[in-house]
Image 1: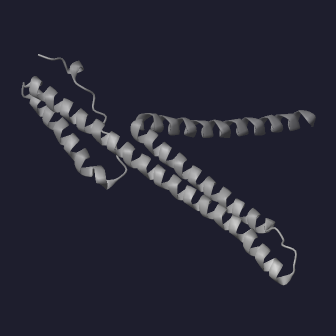
Image 2: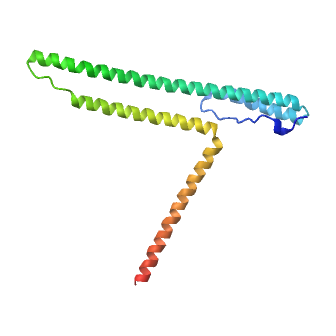
Image 3: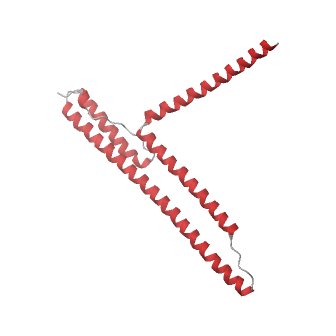
Length: 182
């Protein structure tokens, strides 16, 4: 007979999309069936079901990672296309302005203001993309380490409480100084 310690550990990751609900339910059902088989005295069958549930869970995590990577690649491709369009527009405008200026006899003027606006827009777009990537990274980390995230939030709550205590101590110090000065 196998010990319970020989069982593969199932993590039951919470996936953020309903796309994974059916697979998640299947993993959960396999684990529950394995537990019932184990209690019924069939540890070998239970172990096999647990292994299968673990395999499905790993496949599901890999599928989710692929989908997220594809999403990041699409976002990066959109950003590259937008940058290329801006470069083409920027290179076309000076030629158009030179032609227009030559036809009118004016001196062509560089579109520095327009270039600055486009660069600012590009900077904002890059910042937005960076925030989205950071958000996706946090989601991935949360789903791979759900216990660590809860502990981190509790630590942050403790820090906030500590700040209040420090402020109270500072107020008491000021009051004591005021009383000693009188």
